[in-house]
Every structure is written in structure tokens, then in C-alpha cells.
Length: 321
Image (cartoon, rainbow, N blue to C red; front, side, top):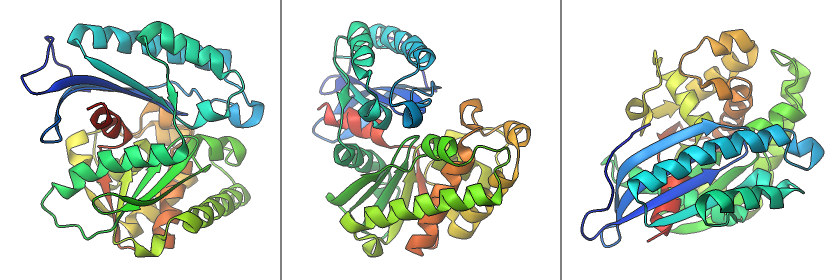
């Protein structure tokens, strides 16, 4: 998390606040965006694991305690936005909110805290925002990654597949996410071979569904974003503590991704919790997230994944100008 004090933005920039509320986490980015250059100067970035999607796959509605956790984080974010004087706010809500029958309670709570309604974006819009945020960093890192890019955003409830170069060519969101698959299949600790096999079938079916809309075989660079991917990268890099700068734009071989996923699925809760790079809120679901990434690498046959710490949150911020 990066914090800054003071209010107001520099001449020519617009201070914006982007909030991404997903199935597992809620994140905030406050940044000064230069509309002419398309660049951003980050002031505050933070994340809380609130597990808003707890049980939604089974019950079809938000649990009261999940709403309570989410609104507590929203209160903190609203205070940060007020202190830094953001001029524009966009709150994007993703997969769990599309599925919940009591989403009106959630919408009213967000409106009361931020003065804006959460946008329950379509899967395709979610994908496009992820692509904009991720590719801005990858195209400017000087490594000359070949295009088209396939940006993969592995969330709690869904995974977005977005193919493009300078702009999006094709996109699809499918209902394979680390929370959804853990709740549906990986119920033992560690999961059994049959549970892993069932989850793998679900993941492969989701990839097949994405492939009907997105020509995956055209991808030349795989770009992975969001917490499951960045956590896998931190484990692969052998970090002693999570280091966002080390993770950002790291290149993890497909073979290493598969090894990390296998190790996580063989470990139990206490072993995963002992790894300092795994956020406590991801300990129960990181095995499923890693398995999703592993199956995607196998399907694509590309040698590595480029990991970006910039994702849908950065895309939301850019969309405000």
C-alpha cells in the first residue's frame, strides 16, 4: 500500500478514485491522471480481503457478515478519498454482485458511503478494463513483448480472457474463480485427488467456453493479473515477504507455474499460512487460483506468463478521464 498526504491535483491532471469490488477483495486506487499523456501518478493503493462472495455460488445471496466486512472497508476508503480530495469516483462491482439476489442492499450501502452507485459491469466490460490497465505497463517496460497479448484476470468468482494489441480484439468472462472453485470442489484440506480432478474439469470447460469467443491460439504473450497470479509469482520468486516492485513485470515460466500450483494443492492450511507472501485472506483459495493459471498455461503452450500489478483497478482510473 502506498500512501500520500495532501489534497488537490497538479495542473493538467485529474485526481480520481477507482474502486474494484470483487468476489474476494475490495481495492482502492487514488491517482492523478494526465488525460493528454494517458499517464498516472499513484497516490494511494490498498486492498482488503472481505470475501463478499462468501457462499453466493451456493445460496445466491450475500451473507450478512460479508456485507458487514465490505462496508467496513468502504468506510476506510471513503475517508481516504475525502482526505486526498479525489474529483471523480468510479466503483465497479464484479462477479458476486451479478449473482446475488440481495444486491440492492449492497448498492444502497455503497451509495451512502461514496455518493455514487456501484456499476455492476458486464463480464466483457470487466475484461476491457483489465486489458487497459495491464497492457499500459507491459507495453512500456521496454522488453518488446510480442503481440497480441492475452490478458488473464483470475478473480474470486470469474476469470476474464482478453486478446488484443493496441486495443481489444476479443474478450470473454467465464465463471471460474478461486473462491467459486474452492467452495464447489476443493473442500478438503488439502484437497483430494478426485476434488482436484473435478476442479480441473471445470477449469478446462471454462477455458473451452472462453475459446469460443477469444481465439486463444493467436496469443503471443500471456499477461496475468490480480491476486492469484501475483501470489503465484511471489512464491515462484522465493520472496521472503511480498514485494510489489519485484512481482511487477516478472516473468514466470509455465513449468514453474505448474510446480507452484502442485505444491499449493498438496499443502494444508497451516503450511500455506506459514508462507509470508500469501495474504491471510488468500490462504484458503490460492490453490484454486494457481490451478486456474496452470491450466491456462498448459492450454496456451506459451513458455511464460508476464505478471502485471496493474490491472482492472488501473483501467477504471484511466476510464474516468
